[in-house]
Length: 167
Image 1 (cartoon, helix red, strand yellow):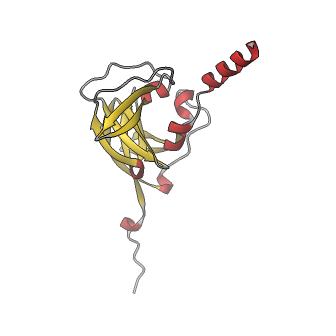
Image 2: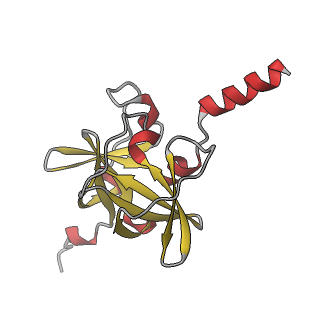
């Protein structure tokens, strides 16, 4: 009996892709709880600028970050395409405000290439990208959600050091 290679057996991981500025980013679907429309956001004083505030999602209070601001891009006025991707990373539930949802794309491990060390990516965004996938010639920047929500802002650390030095 001849050996038969079945391409469908190759495990592909699915990524929810979304638009932010002119780029398309992806986050593994295993982290995505749901996608919701933008609802009322309660501002929280003295937080990072990208932490827009809190939303009440069926009785659960969830922090919401604006991915565009997190990546050091200019804020954009929210519109009817703006939505929130609710993700769960190591038991931390957080909402990501994105410009628009793109699609669900699937990549095998060998179809994901590491990001180049020198690229046109904004340095702020690049540190959250673990790989690059391509679908029909379109580049998708694949994000590490743990770094995205847990990586501290260096500017805030520097300010804290400055205040300590002044005392």
